[in-house]
Length: 398
Ligand SMILES: Cc1cc2nc3c(=O)[nH]c(=O)nc-3n(C[C@H](O)[C@H](O)[C@H](O)COP(=O)(O)OP(=O)(O)OC[C@H]3O[C@@H](n4cnc5c(N)ncnc54)[C@H](O)[C@@H]3O)c2cc1C
Image: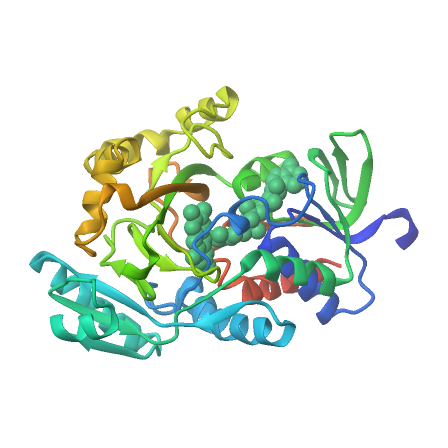
């Protein structure tokens, strides 16, 4: 019977979540045959390879949520994993800085939340901010000790190597045929058929489409939000990681300054609608995908509810001067000329029909399927616990 299948678990998506799932399956149940299908020629070409590279502490997330639990645990595990495999990383700590009086209650709420999540935080006044970051100005700040940075692409590669899974790059899944008694068969763009006993969907920006191909309609849509970055031409202006106080209405953290593992300082990401799921610039438009976003009622509800926030983000996307102005609130010495355009990323944000941006990680099961339907930031940080949870659910089906 087993021979009728090409593998036991078929994972779609070779980003950090799919690879962590493959890794966790072969650790929890040695001998399980796992195949990962990835449409790109290598791992981590989308969200995993286009992010801020920050190991998030877990301070932002609602206590008890999957994000809070997996980020706190995942951050510690990620540091250990990187140390074990010689992957570049550092535990740098970070500052969250209030620059306006109206932000102070939210900053204090974050202190409280951090403590509830068991995260070491230190409250700072203006002069203490300058001890950490001489060029940063603010009314108050908090220092979060457990935040770090790492190379998530190297982590993904190591997970791929360590998983022992068969990984087929350049393999796009275009159709899925699920037969409850016979497992799952997928058709690839090159016409091959791959059969597994259970299918795990870790397709990131396309996770809702893959779910629908299996016949499970998740009733959420991925709405792609691009995050644009600049590189700071004078990296000496910033020592570490500097964040604004986020707006709690959004799962985005606001434009921040991050000294990456490469020593450069990245500034971003903002959050603007992308015109394609892998639309890394305004020039990339995929009409079918844009049409799917526009016909989802949730997209219009977001636009109606959050047009003011959206207009600000669009302005900062279209005008470098406006972007620089936002950065100057934190670091007054930054000028427009200091900003060098850098590669953008696109977030796979799940949105409900009523326009709610799904805040927590979302994993759903169907018959012989496990779908990861919302794995935005901090899912790279939390990828080891997420992978274990998805693996646990997939193994139950076998
Ligand atoms: C701008 C930005 C900044 C971020 N900053 C951080 C941060 O600092 N820290 C943090 O922890 N997280 C951060 N994140 C979030 C983090 O990058 C993601 O949560 C994480 O990478 C999600 O991994 P994934 O494997 O689910 O998705 P992905 O990395 O997108 O992988 C999905 C894979 O599925 C493949 N795929 C899709 N469709 C198919 C198909 N039909 N057939 C075969 N393969 C398919 C894709 O090619 C892709 O490789 C950020 C994200 C963005 C966009």
